[in-house]
Amino acid sequence: MSIRLYDTATREVRDFVPLEEGKVGVYVCGLTVQSEPHVGHVRSAVNFDVLRRWLTHRGLEVSFIRNVTDIDDKILTKAAAQGRPWYNLAYEMKRELDRAYAALNVLPPTYEPAATGHVPEMLELIEHLIARGHAYAAEDGSGDVYFDVRSWPEYGELTHQRIDDMEAAEDADPRGKRDPHDFALWKIDEKHLMQWDSPWGRGFPGWHIECSAMSYKYLGGTFDINTGGEDNVFPHHECEIAQGEAAHGCSPVNYW
Image (cartoon, rainbow, N blue to C red; front, side, top):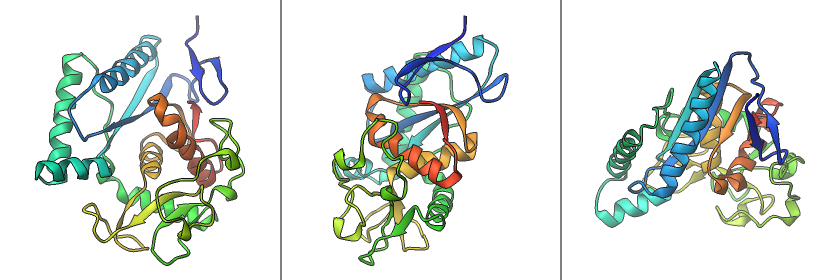
């Protein structure tokens, strides 16, 4: 009997066939290290650990990548409330999560990239999207960079939505956008505590570009399975598909 997985993109249960015989690449949209473990963290870890073990049991060599989201405003807010540096909070919460997973006998990932360690890859991907005509620097001169959803007609394919039926993105002043649905790839904010140099000024990446850059680096332009919580389907995974297809000309994931 084959392994069968529910695929959000096709809304059906599909037989799993790896892209490369005998091997499978899995990416888990990992945790935002802002607080102690809760039941949602545990459910995610156990769910995908079971999937990984089944794939291994069936004789597949599994590359299991689970990222750490340590660039996020929630981390800044909680660190400020506790009177501590944001990176100290993120590091401590990461260690707490590791201990919780170990107590549950969840296998460690093949690799666990942190967003803070992959800003160069994010910048490279953003520049590539701009060069291909799918992203642009904000027209108000702020230095913010957005993905142009109108340049990619398939945007909405994962959730089967039309662009005009979606709510506008809420990540910046709409005066800098070509379309209210465009989402941020890079943000400029002189007061923001998380900042890196970029061609558009010192700033920080948007949430969606983080996972696209890390999954591409460790699993390639197209890999087998992308997982995450149901709340990741829109907008996070939807935006990942658009970025991946627009940048590389092919679907970034075979099963969602």
